[in-house]
Length: 75
Image (cartoon, rainbow, N blue to C red):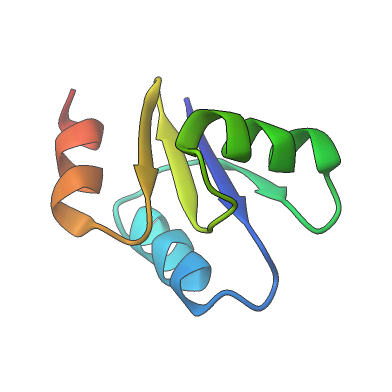
């Protein structure tokens, strides 16, 4: 399962969404501006309140890092 934590104005969030779509991957998106529980989760699991954060089956990736995304998707 892929969960993507985003904010509406984040350019890198849009880039991750497009990248996942291009790879044919479905994901659940959580907007941190609308979901306080999701914002808490990001802070607790990354130590920062930065986006995008992608959780791919328990592998948490901060930012738009293609090599890390590809490695997690390959598992």
